[in-house]
Length: 207
Image (cartoon, rainbow, N blue to C red; front, top):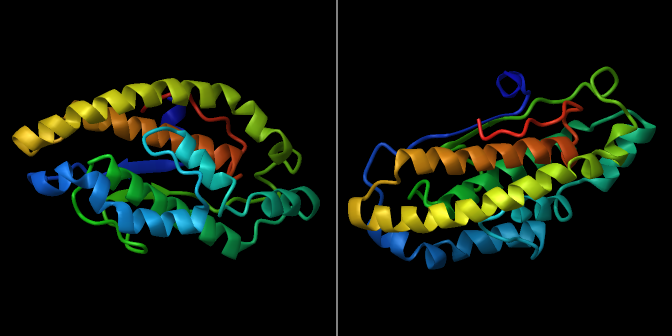
């Protein structure tokens, strides 16, 4: 029940058409231009297919340490910092889901497209504990370990899905939901430990 009330929402539209077999086959090459743009924003620490690529963002373009200090000393989350972080998250997930074969449309730098996220603007004075940002990254360590293990399964699932799309044009729905659950879990941890949007501990769940 906890995951249904968690403040971070994430959903990916299941493609209602046959996926392009040609771009699927060459996805590792077709993604290069947009991946380069993402890498320039977040630095080079991007590891596709595992939770680590999400956490790599947190040490790069995310305004994490300045934000931590702002919450700690001023109890403020500047709106423009929030907007930057949220838009970067959305862009990153569009690129990630394209790479993970969940859609064959090319990722946009600014349009929502098939990835839908809800990241609430926090009430820093009443909704966030000003001291929690210091330890959230540490408290989330069990999630890092679990996501790493699930990420291995996602890698295997993606290989199966790649062949399925080449032969049928479809990403099997059960496999699609599994990968979506992994990304949803990753986003909850990211929002808790690095975006600092909530003090509510993320559930260990793919739902």
